[in-house]
Length: 535
Image (tube, rainbow, N blue to C red; front, side, top):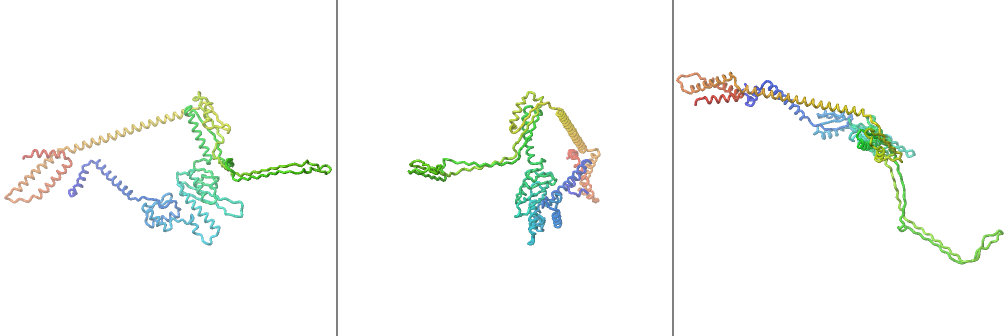
C-alpha cells in the first residue's frame, strides 16, 4: 500500500515509523500546536482593525446607529458603556456619510439646532428659553472636547433685561463635569472651563461661575476660587501650603548640612496677604527752560501835578485840610504766562500673596548640636527666611534631646527586611541553579540514551545478519536462474519470469528498508560482498 505513495511522503512515513514512542508523542504534540497556533494567527490576522465611528452618544442615538449597522450587515463593537461605536477602519468615512444622510446621530435636542424649530408664532418667552437651552447645549458640547472630560452639563441663569429697574441682576452659571475614569481635572483645566463659560455669556463674570464634579466635589466656587482635584480647600490655601513646604525644605537642607540629617526639625507658619490693593497717584512737573506756551504782559504808568485836596470831616463837619499841592506818580505791571505741565499718573497694583507675618521654630538635637552656637544659627536662619521683626515675625531656636527609639526600631526593621531580601535572593539563586542542573542532567541523559539507541540501530543483530545472508543466497540463485534462462534449452520449461520479478521486487524493498534504517552496517556488509566476489 505504501509503495504507491510519492517518494517524499513515503520517506516521511518511514522516518516517523523509526521514531521511539516518546519521539512520536513529541512530534504529534508539536504538529497539533502548530495547527492550533496557525488557526489563531489566521483568525487574528483576518480580524479587521476597528476605529471610533461616533462617541459620547446618547442611548437613543446609539440604539439607532446600531440598528442601521445591523441592517447593512456591518460589523461593529460597543465600548464606553455603549456610548462609543467602533467599526472597521476602512469603512469609517463611508459609514459616517451614510448615517449622516439618515440623520444620525440626531442632534435635534441640543445646541443651536433648537432655534431651527421656532416658528413665527413663537412667543418672546419661548424664544428666550430656547436660546438659553441652545447656549447651554453648545457650552456642554464644547466642554466635552476638553481632554479628561467625559460628560458635562451647563445651567445658566440669565435675568430678563428691564429698562425700568435700577437694580440690575447679573447672570450666573453652574457646570457639572464628569471626568474620565482614573483622571482628575487640574486647576488649569477648571479655570479654562470657568473662563470659557464666562466669555460665552454676555455680562457673565468669571466669579459667578460654579464648577462641580460628578462625585460631588467642588472644583470652583462661585467666588472665583479654584479648588481643583488636589484636595485643598481653596487656591489661597494651596499657595500657602506650597510656600510653607518650599520654606521648610530650604531651611531643613541648611540644618542637615550643619548638624547632620535627622538632628534638626524646622517648622514655618506663614501668614500670607491675598488682598488685592490698587494705588493711584498723579504727579505734575514743568521745565522752566522751555518757553511759555502763552504769555500776557500788562503795565500801567501814571505821573502828574495838582492842588491839594480836602481832608476828612472834623467834629463840626468842617473839612480838615490835607496838605499843599504837589506831584504824583503811579505804576502797575501784570505778567501772565501759561506753560505746559507734564502729568504722570501711576497705578500700582499689589500682587496677592505677600508675606504678612512669618513665624519660624527650630528644634536641634542636643546630642549632635552641643558645640553649635544657637545665636549664630538664629541669625543665619533669620537671614535665609527673611524674618522682619518690624512686621511681627518671630524665630525661636532650641536644643533638646531627641527620642531615637523609633529611629532605631525603623533601622532594625530595615536591616531585617534587607537580610530577608538577601536570603530570598540567595534562595532564588540556589533554586535556579538546581533547576538548571536538573535541566542539563535531563538533556545529558536524553543525549546519551539517543546515542545508545542509535548505536543499537546501527549494529546488526544475528537475525538480521542471517536475513542478509539469505538475501545474498537468493540473489545468487536468482542470478544463476537468469543465466539458465538465457542459455537455450532443448526442452520447453514453464514461464517463471513473473515469479522471478515479484521475488526481485520484494528483495529490493527489503534491502531499501534495511539501508534506510542502518545505512552504515549495510554499506560495510555490501563492501565485504564486493571484496569477496570473484572477478
